[in-house]
Image (tube, rainbow, N blue to C red; front, top):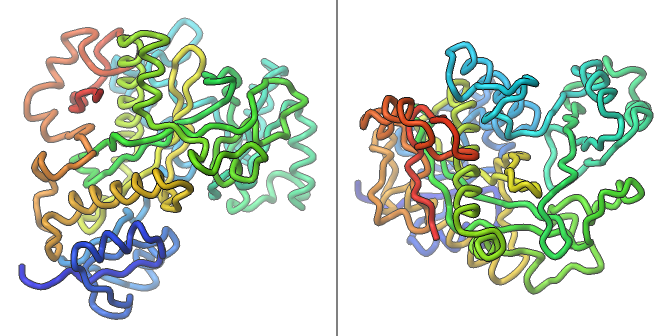
Length: 423
């Protein structure tokens, strides 16, 4: 199709604009005819709202699915994963196997979580089973560490409720809803500091599910050494890895930004724990990501005009078990260091090469399966069509230990993860 792609964005970031300009695309306003709109989550809400009655044409694509929040709101992500577990249990899937205490053997990859105010009584019951535990409270709809705090006493929740200007939990609106999760108090430490992983995952379609993993993720380190001491519960420089918080710390390093590449983490783990252990950990992380996407795929509005680049946050504990903490719909495109800028520029470049093949005017009827040579630093993480087409489902169920997934063990996936572990 002749003509130049016309683009709009309401996120004024150089890594976006430089990529559009490099392609020779033409900037227009949102009121003109556009082909590609990189938009904020607020804008996507308006575009797909019933009130606006907006209809996208076949030559228009956007960077979010209409109800991306099924995965990117903390409460909805947990709700969908819980539903997914129950469905697999009903089907008698080996994935839903439990141990003697009723804990999932394989699907136990999100910390124990409750919604407040709705699950307050259930939470209290759980809290009383191990009253010495620490819990982390997060507002459902916020990002960058805003509104997060740790508690280890029920009285702190009651105080929070009063401070939230609510006469009781039941009067709280959903806008102020929080999730409360068991805090991972035994994180893997490097140099005595806590860190998490930020990994980028591109979904081009949910039905069939096709997703890609970006090889150049990074670790975000806290600036202050970790201690599980209850006297430091209020010190967010010890507990929260968000750059938005850590950059205000006295020990924040503006050159490396408290970040390590995933490649460096892998080298560190291979040298301290061995190659096999490191490979298994990364296989588990990939498996968790695919399971989280499968959990939301049935409820996701799989609009053909949409793709999405998610920011996954994973914490690894000292037993090398990975935990899915949350998924971000608009992972930060702000560059805190020179390396950051290069990484994010390349991330957008590679994302556009998959989402807008050949940089041509989009056609929503295109086959969303690009050739390998355009993937750049992305690798196919999971392709449902490919998995079903090659009979992988039957093969995996009959060959224990052959699938990618936690701790060796039984075959645990319906449809094989395609990704070959990178070095």
